[in-house]
Image 1 (cartoon, rainbow, N blue to C red):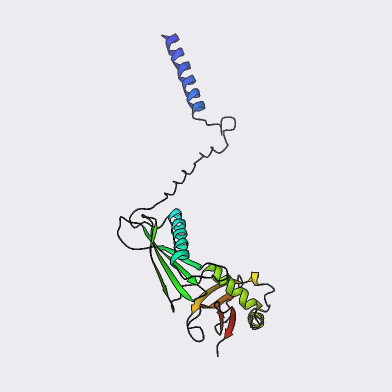
Image 2: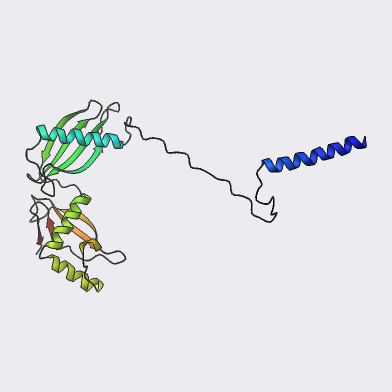
Length: 233
């Protein structure tokens, strides 16, 4: 009986030791005072973005690219000839691409662009399900928000214009130092539709440097269509 009891105790000790080794308690095996190992947690991989959405889902990146390509191809055939973008290059200035409301079974998009040659906002209706342009529309007097590319062009125009000296002087008066380069400025803009810009694409710039207040430039309007800057009375 004693032999059996001793054998059982030895087996229990071996089992406990084996269990501890299996659980991987390496921190503390040699150093009982060491902190326990932190378990590694891995993030699950991101699910692949589908090529096409369904119903009223937002447009996928692939659908946005497809809508842009179909719209530009459609404008080349049916749109205003000789359209130019904000830099004067051939082709309209792409503003935004958005999902169009319609039948939930069809995927549709509206592509908005601006033709600087004719100063018209152009909308191209695209049926992504059928892969074709269903309509092209143009109108004057409609000015959606400026794109980052247009804002950058406006900053460049103001910086190189004679009124850029006035802008730099206002920075000096407001902050103690005039900007040395346009790259120092953090810009945003709002479209302006009053006189003398009722027929052109114009913006008012909001400029500041990081950590500093905005400088009042509300009397300066950048006319992107004419490539100049005007001062309001």
